[in-house]
Amino acid sequence: MTEEIPAGPPPAGRYVEEEVVTPPPRRPLLWPWLVLLLALVLTGIAAAYFLTRDDAAKTEVPNVVGLTTALATEKLGQDGYLTVVNAKASNRPLGTVISQNPPAGTELDRGGRVTIVVAGGPLTVEVPNVVGLPVDKALIRLQAANLRGQIVKVASTKPKDQVIRQLPPGGSKAKKDSTVALTVSSGPGGATVPSVKGLTEASATATLSRLGFRLSISRIPSTQPKGIVISQQPPPGTKAPKGSIVGLNVSAGSAPAAGGVAVPQVVGLDQVAAIDKIEQAGLTVDSFPVGSSKPRNTVVSELPGAGTKVPPRSVVRINVSLGPGTAPQRPVPDVTSQPEADARRALARAGFTVRTLDQPTADSAENGIVLKQKPAGGEQATAGSQIVIYVGRLPTAEG
Image 1: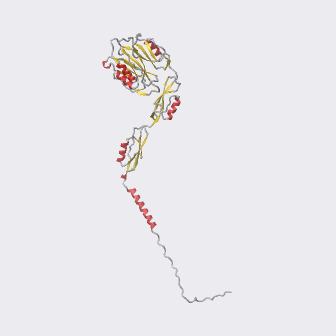
Image 2 (image 1 turned 90 degrees about the vertical axis):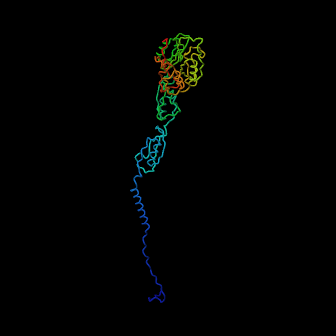
Image 3 (image 1 turned 120 degrees about the vertical axis):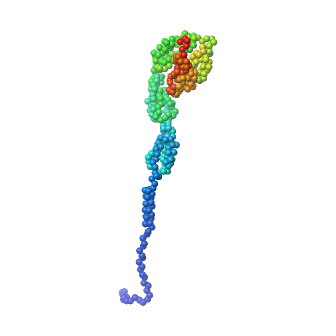
């Protein structure tokens, strides 16, 4: 059984009394408010700067499109702008500004950059080789290369609608969207060249003209009667397109005298060298283009033959090779108003053959001078083709 202790006064002795102290309330922190205040102040300063700064710091970008690079850079620099130059292939003149960024009229701070794009030269493409292809496939291939085709049809032994020549040639460079001239076969056509040897000039002319051929006549000293055809080119039996040229050598009716001029040997020479050699011998010369595997502009035959004695100033006909492959197109020099010999050399140096025809004149100042030419100067013609010059001649005692 537990004994209960009676309540009473505490026992005598020393006691320590503890005092509970309540801590004072914490003071609020000030630094976050100071940071917020500083941010507001800075924001206000920035806003004031953008709202009150000098408007003269902004100007409108000038228009420099169409100027040269140098002028555009100078103009932008005068307005306080830096220029960034980029080049782009273009058909515009080299160095011309074709665009700008920012565009003209845009407000831009001084010291800002303006990018200009300048023409870096024409955009060229490689011309595909379409010779030998059917014309429809050739046109598709040209279109794929960003080129256009222009068709000229001619009679040919090649299959109908086959491309037989092109200009510019395959592998060369041409401007994008430019035109390639295509010579296309219309199939075998034309007529067979008849034999006119032994006929009079008038009869031969009538026969060949009726078949659609054009004539090129050279008068050659011969023992045959005057006006008789003594040879022809191409030979009889050749199939030739209508409109092509048949060359006739017609007797001048004067047999060469024993003391005449010997025709020099020019076969194998370049046309220009052959012309010089014949004219130095006191003779005149006509040159005619002929198909040959010999190098272009090489003389492959001459008539009369080398060593033949002929009267002074007689005409010697030389046949000049058109050469292998496709002949290029070239501009025809303008030789009007030039002396006959100078005109002949100028055309020969340009790669053409030359035939001279007399043009009667009563003006002594026109005697021996080229009065006109076909084709005209500046026109395009195939290298090796014949240029006809019409030379002024005063009437002779016989005429």
